[in-house]
Length: 272
Image 1: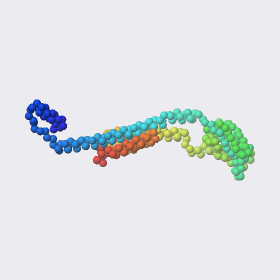
Image 2 (image 1 turned 120 degrees about the vertical axis):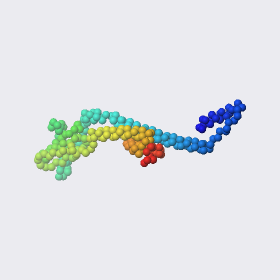
Image 3 (image 1 turned 135 degrees about the vertical axis):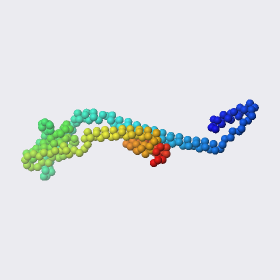
Image 4 (image 1 turned 90 degrees about the vertical axis):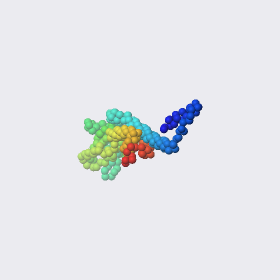
């Protein structure tokens, strides 16, 4: 008999006593039934507790992954293609400085003619002469490829192709003689270009969004409790979502820890 039936039987006995009817046989509750019922209740509580851990783990992983997706979208919000186009359309200008030295002695040379030439049209844009310290200067030079021609009587002329990205140029050294020496400084710049920087930023944003999507899949797997190892691997990859730098990964790590505590509830854990 279950609890409800026992209660109904007890109520019936009370009503019979009140109405003067004979007592029926006493209702005996076996001790073994009470123990079995209590044991079943404890098992039920344990199952509910573990399911609660998995539900919390799933929620933490889900929140951390969503934060990662938001972070990736924020990285893409600036529209890198438009940013690159606008930056290239607006040519920046810099002031170019330099010094001319005599090759053998290393002394500065005064009165050297220095010409700034447009590489595309071969037209002279600006001219300058070195001062008593051997320095020359060009102002408001557009940051695209140019040629600087340095010439002085009885010395070999130097023509240097360069892109003015910094203010100070490598010193010119003149040697006595005739003719022209050509120098190409456009290949010496080993730094990151704007295109590379934007491509890297876009790649990081896409990986961040992908990791967030994988994390949502891991949260779903934790809720279903079907495959323990697969769910942990997916949650581990979701750490790359970098939701708000550290906050998202911290939530995902907490969810992974809760899954370890409740790993017995996964269907395939005992098989492994």
